[in-house]
Length: 243
Image 1: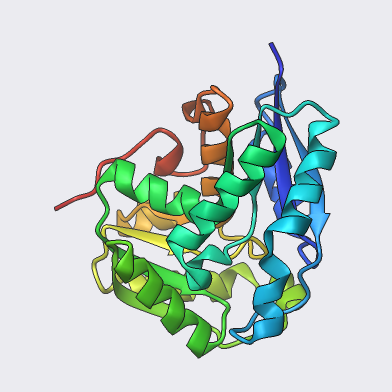
Image 2: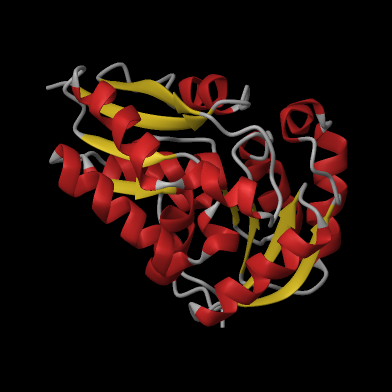
């Protein structure tokens, strides 16, 4: 039986779709389908926050329901700085409107952390410093301590997609020095997912990428087994955090 996953994509994003297709390459019975909402900049100002209102998300979700998807994921990390509980309420509002289970990149990462027993994490992002600090504060309020972090201090969201793997690898290694139980590459317009296997072999620390976590959560909500995805890091098979 086919499984159809609905994905709501930030409009400036050019990484999410191709990486998701790569992750699903060996699962011919699972397909991902995308709908977009307008997201053109990332900051803490009011205009940026307005991009993540419920109404456009619900409209995007309704379009996905024309494809009879089994679950939906908001593939944005805005919940990281707007708040995990506020993000959960957004997902619930979308779900109530369209009648299928809904998650988000933020709910996926925090859900995976809880399932694995992660309480101390490392954070790698492209974001501005004030956005980074707000993410750390909001995750702390949700019960997760950021023990090491690195960020690029950039707000040119479209250009995040062109940042080289070597740059991300360097930041991840820096954060690994803080001995977190897991590291998250947080942003769905960066290519962190392909780094999971080599980084985990090198550091021994699980890498939880936002795109990978979103797919993991969407599969679970649709009743499919994420462990069928092989070669993309420990998170798909399930891991337990080291003490």
